[in-house]
Length: 140
Image 1 (tube, rainbow, N blue to C red):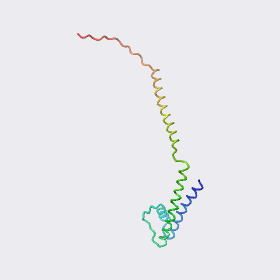
Image 2: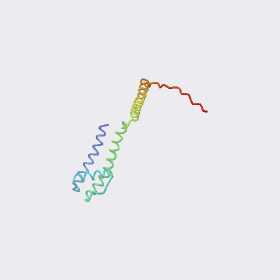
Image 3: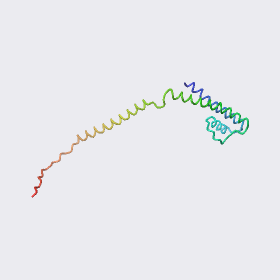
Image 4: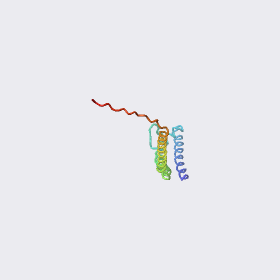
């Protein structure tokens, strides 16, 4: 699995490097601008702030876009499927187990506090009040 992902990531990196060097040499753009345009082209965003001006750059862009976008999307799709198909990022069973443990601890804490309160209440009894009988007054 790791070897396959390494090959696919290498494909993406090679495409980015190839496009960056080509635009740097053909258009005379800086490496940053060339990398930016390559990335924008391969991800099919296409802001339009940079565009090829020479005939050679236009032809290269057409060929690069047709081949590069396909390779890029294929590689990214396989990378994602390799990563997510083997083991899910969030495993429901683990989350459920952790949630149950957390809730059980909380319930036990509450029960412990109730028991402590009841014991404390029994240990510290209030002195009994002495009630004196007061007869009710009779109505005349």
